[in-house]
Image (tube, rainbow over all chains, first blue to last red; front, top):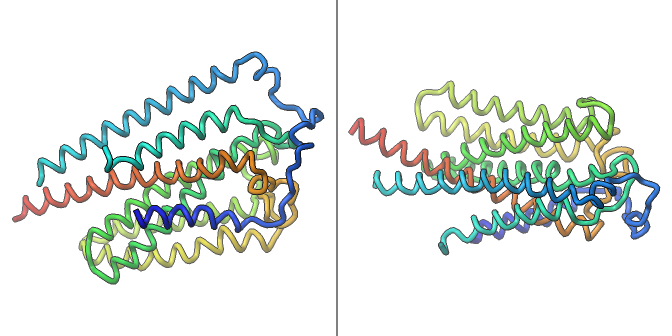
Length: 79
Length: 223
């Protein structure tokens, strides 16, 4: 628990490394001069991507959990 | 279940990273365009790597103090996972660089420095594998690991800043480094760092536990 907290605080403090920042303003969010994938978003195709990458992620996480279980079982056997 | 709360947190943070990273509003910046979303997937790899290597360096010091082989296990496996993260960082960076800077490898100081850093840690693995004796391997490995970490920090955070670099916040490229000031990007970026780092911790602990089991089995064989 204490270790985790230390890791988290480190995460937060490390972002202060970056210097010479360009400030993003609201104007950058509205700037339609810059081309973005607006059409793809409007078509809803972006959700296809979210679903596909989500499926891959779920598969990998599920696999990791199953490995975790197997290791726990091994630990019990060896003990 | 209570013991596994941080694994559940990992999964939740990663799902949030995926959905938020792809769907949330991002600033419309020239050159970067939609690729600014790579921030949550490329930059976070390096954060995770550095944090895992920090843990490895700490446990290397602990090993030298205690001589407890368990501390060596932790140092090795955290280094291994960090190397995976670092390689992913290099590859994702190359893809991103191709589409924003024009080439996979620009000889950018930070790119070169991170490649050197990773090679340094590969040498760590080779060094360890070349030694037979368990305690000797652990001791020499621990000393090397501490030095490697001490060399990595200036390589990644100091030297690129002294010359011109394409990376944001280094040399002359200020228009790029909007991330940590923008609260909407930060909303995904910080959870993403924690999520990817925790995933690295999870995988490291799995391999550490396997190492412990393996040693018990081996010791039993010779006993």
